[in-house]
Length: 557
Image (tube, rainbow, N blue to C red; front, side):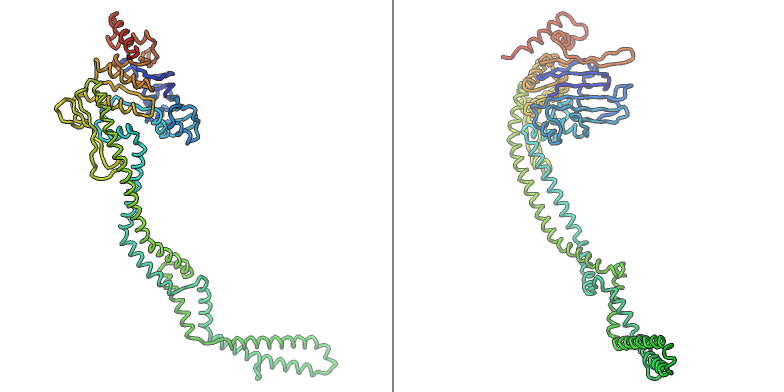
């Protein structure tokens, strides 16, 4: 429950610290005194939107913190534990600068505003003064029924199943809509892959083909020139080898006295003869191995031409064709496997749809059972609120199409007077009746809430007299088992509270401040008297207020 609220420089509050008790706490004050400031400050700690108007005039920032005892809130403890935050208590803090920037902390750790809101929903429930207006909206009826019956988790699972179903349906439709485009792409890929299959160009084949083409294209020149070179080396009628041998013979025949001077020359000539013989042998071998093969040349040139033609078609270099071939083959295989994807996705749509229908059926049955119990409890509260002749009904009507909320819609019906047919709650004409109906519904919903801290902001608008006293009794009964804070203008309601918080606006010089104080018994009597009789309090009014307080605080028998 909420145990402490600290406010600094917020609206017209300069500094305020409140220790808040359990049970029912009445919050009163004159109109415009600032009762809404208290709820506004608490709302900021719970993730409400902030603006520059939140900061007190002339100050740099507003600073609000709220401390909660979460010993009875396992959901809040689990939320903190999941984020590795301390779970012995819960301290929310919100700071809003005059420039409009906002920061938040949870147990001293920086937090996003969305985290404040998510945690706040597990800490406290606020029933606003315009709740009866929200009850005119059909979606509110469904949310109230689910909350009453503890079906929020089931409703969340159903909404998730619906989203999965819709996502699968969208994917299947997209795949089917793309069918013509996919088939056209498949046909093109098949043609391109078949063409590359026929070419079957290996990764390192192109350089080899180019070398071979050069060799085949010049085979005639190679054969002619190598044969000529070989003849130059060893022809008998003037070849270099024959001439060299003649030179060696002449020098070898010289007189002996000159042989020593020519020894080195003869050695060089002998080496040259050996080199010429080897060169002639190599040239003859090359000439013998060179063949004129026009058919092979045509084949190689045709293959090179095909490779360059296909490369130009795909706008890639010829050497990139093997990689392109593999990529196109992979894409074609993937498209061919897409037919299996279509079958798989169709099956997924059916499975998601079946899961949704099963969850929706189970949730619908639970809602129908809860609707009867909910209507009965609201009927009892209406009788307690002097509307014993009214008839309250909860109707579940089938939806035309499945939705994230389920297969049915929930509608509240009311017949305020005997003999009149029940009509939708939105068609109730009397504002007083609507206020009491709204209060009865909120009391029933709050009594089944797992969150023990409740705030009622002027939910008693439109009631008076004995009914107002009954409203106070209802709120006190809720406070007996939890924490209830109620903003009220009715002394009959305020008198029922376990404790009483008074809010007052004071003007000093050029400043206006809101002050809040927990009243003792004397202060409560004076405030109740003011609410009963106005500014000038007579002894009779004070006596009436004292009797109202004592009577309300007397244990019920």
